[in-house]
Image 1 (cartoon, rainbow over the protein chains, first blue to last red):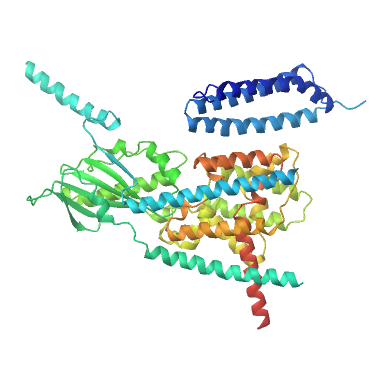
Image 2 (cartoon, helix red, strand yellow; image 1 turned 90 degrees about the vertical axis):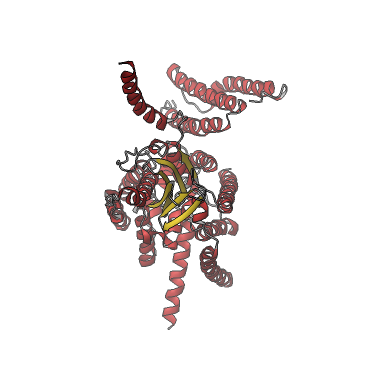
Amino acid sequence: MFPQSTLLDPLFWMVLGAIQVLVFTGASQWAKEYQLGMNWWKWAIVGFWWLSFILTIAGAFTLLGENEGNAGWYVLGFVGTLLVIGGAAILKVLVLLKPNPQ
Amino acid sequence: MRKKLLFVFYIVSAMIVCVHLGLRVNYLTQLEASNTPLFVATYSDNATGPQARVKDSINYKEWAEKYEDQTK
Amino acid sequence: MYSKKRSDSRKKVASIVSVILLLLSWYAGSTRITDNQSGMVEQLLIKGDGLNQIDDRLYEGSIANNLSPVEYIGLGSGIGYGGMTEVAVTVSLLGDIQRIAVLSSKDTSSYLDKVIQSNLMEKLLGQNIKSSFDIDGVSGATVSTNALTEAIKRAADPVSMELFGINRVENEKSSSHFRWLDLMAIAMFMMAILVNKTRHQQKSMFNWAMLLTSMCVFGFYSSSLFSSSTMGILISGAWLSGLGNYTSIILLSMVILYIIATNKNVYCNTLCPFGATQECLAKLGNTKTISLTSGVFEWFPRGLLLVTLCLGLYYRNPASFSYEPFGIMFGMIGSMYLFVLTAITVVTSLVVKRPWCRTLCPMNPMTDFIRFNRQWIKSIFKKR
């Protein structure tokens, strides 16, 4: 993202990596709190969505760093928005498929 | 919480819209002041664009005929 | 009671000031030094040094000390989205097109850019004006393409007449721009009125059906919903000299007439494609209806619409001044800023219901203006 800077560039990618750690460790806690009843295929869908999201952000910011300003913003705006909508849809489905409390 | 989000959305949208309109005014003013056409496309013999290919294909036929005459 | 009176008198003042400002903008626009056409045409000479005007659509270029012309420049115009697109064509003595220039356009610049980037004009360079032009359309920018195409053909006409004595058949009728979409707009509007009036059990379902149909037809399929630029086109009278696309102005006119007649707005809740998109997104997320009630939030969109309309009138170019996300949402055409606006509106729609409608949509100021003045005029007539 900041290829011209020797400080900001590694910092940016380290922060992105750190967020990943937090998300991964927090995800199962979060799912338990909301009693979503996660199983293997639900995790697979969520994992796929998260992978797409992270790749989009990484890709968009790499483009921005490569001075491809327009391309970067378009990827973030177009694909990013679609993924956010997709994420909301997945969340809705997960909530609908919640197992009934015993 | 949602009210705050809508408020933020309002402010950000308003800023974007104002910038957009300002840029449009700037663009149109400059366009009028410069009195130049919006866009000009000029034919060029040396161009490698689509129009050159058309001309080349016609010339090739003529060239081929001329060559045939010359080598007879 | 007192504060209502104060608010009413403030609205009356604002209403009158708005109309005055619009008229002033219109007048100021007419005093503007408009495009110096022959000055621009002079820049299009290739071989010639000097320009000689033969008639209002034909110029000849000649070299100094030489009476016979070396090239001709023809001018033509085509009906575009917001008005006329003017084109000039430089033609050699053999009739080959040497240069094509877009002198002015009233279309939204993003659409024109898309047509220009498709190399439509470059493909015509080198062709002879005796032959008929094969021009490819540009999907998503049909109106602008047609305007440019018509303009280039019309520009070639006077040159063709001068050089070869051929009168190219002009069979473009401006009235032939009415399409099935216009009929669809009228039909859907009638149905919207019915759906709003009915007390049927399934009213909500009918409403959803209307919204979804409108989103698909007037939104994603044709991107022909109206915007603040349509309002500008309507009040500036640009539609009187012909438009490339009548659907949006037909829709807008029907909405305005219905509000004047019945004080009701059936468009926003039943027909608006962008509203429909926001409603669909609202269903996905866990949304709530939120309003911002302070006076500033009510008056800012009004001022914004007024400024936009005034600018459109002043520059005689209403299509250049629009600020809605519609173009991006349904056609992926528009400036980077509107693209960002669309993205954040879409994301916010997942959390708040219809955020664009609740904040900056120009429909609210327009409806408020018409309703207020309708009531005011009614009360004046009642007193008499």
